[in-house]
Length: 243
Image (cartoon, helix red, strand yellow):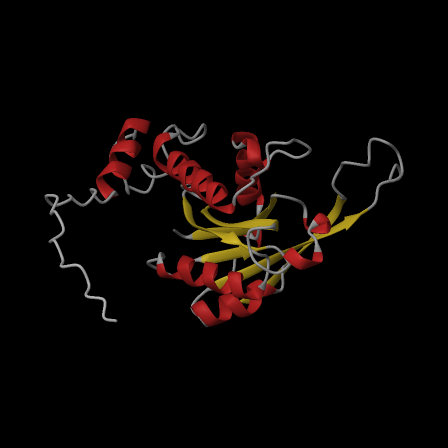
């Protein structure tokens, strides 16, 4: 990878964060759930992802994992989330060309109309900033990772807004994402590349099928332990009762 973009996409599990009772707030798995993603701009390969909260602790785990998968110095672009600053510094130090794209949002003139009720805020502009190194200003962008976020919302029912298809268990949410990213990287042909994202950089030399994915899952499963022959318990003498 040479140019990497990172972003977070929002979803929720069981109920939205504002509806979580006070007694259930705190543990991960109820309320807001964010998926951190890092994509290679050239091959469109998802390099790393993490399901968690949108805070500094999860940012550090995500960026550390991303750094461990890169073989050379890259240009990194993120949004203006402050948690990235320390996470990137701890993981890469000065060995990175890091740019940040800060978007400016505002309310449109029809902010109080019925159509505005379920629409996101309108982007009024963006500011490109250099955080570390010497990133190319023309490539300080998050357009590729944001397009990938749109693919996630279109490809998984549990990410669709204003439906009852949201995740009820965090484990199922994580399983669905694991299947999605495996399918996206190895099985799905990218429309502009004409190959899968894993084939573009040479990670895979073939286009996988879902049968290949299922075979991989079955190969990783541990076979059940064989039960030994049934042994009849030895007879014991009746206890002596003294007067």
